[in-house]
Length: 242
Image (tube, rainbow, N blue to C red; front, top):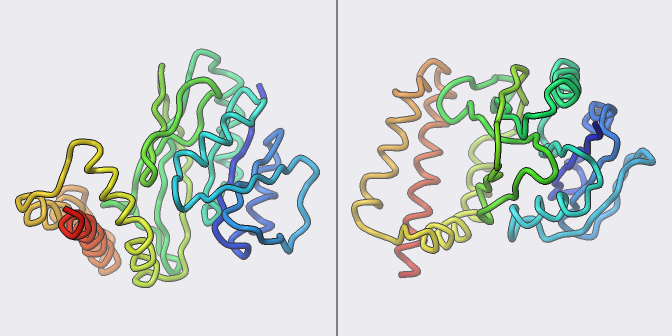
């Protein structure tokens, strides 16, 4: 069984030598480059570079990688995530020993300033490993991999590391909110005052209390608050565009 590892990159300084070396189990590595910039680190011979405006449509960028891959399996990794040796070993074991499986969920933990969040929206399950022909991605932002067939789950987590909190969310709000607002409208979820008034506080309550975000301390509180602000921003953009 062969594996293609795919990395989406927005800025040239996001690609780390350690990330590339952690993917040494992959038969080929795709770098989806958002912009014409040069890489300042040496790249292995099995690396292929594709230019695509990722920030406009994340699903289309990922589907491009699927169409270009000649491998049996694809693994999608963001440039600010890390793949441990335990996760790499589990990935290779699963794709070799479970031929009937179509895809796998990976648990992803958000990490800020060296503290890893394991509750609330700081802990999410995402389909990041699947067979080439198992499905395709939908939604331009907050994209989802629609899979046809049986989906398993890996035990070893991905760690999504950040060097800041507030500025990161503000940048994401500015970039993603207009795209997300348009997607919701196309999905039959247009602006409404009940959604504007209920969804943001409901998101905070769900993340902080139901998903136990309070167990992550002050950082869990800040993260739950910022996620509710993100939800509010999408509804405000819908309101402005109605």
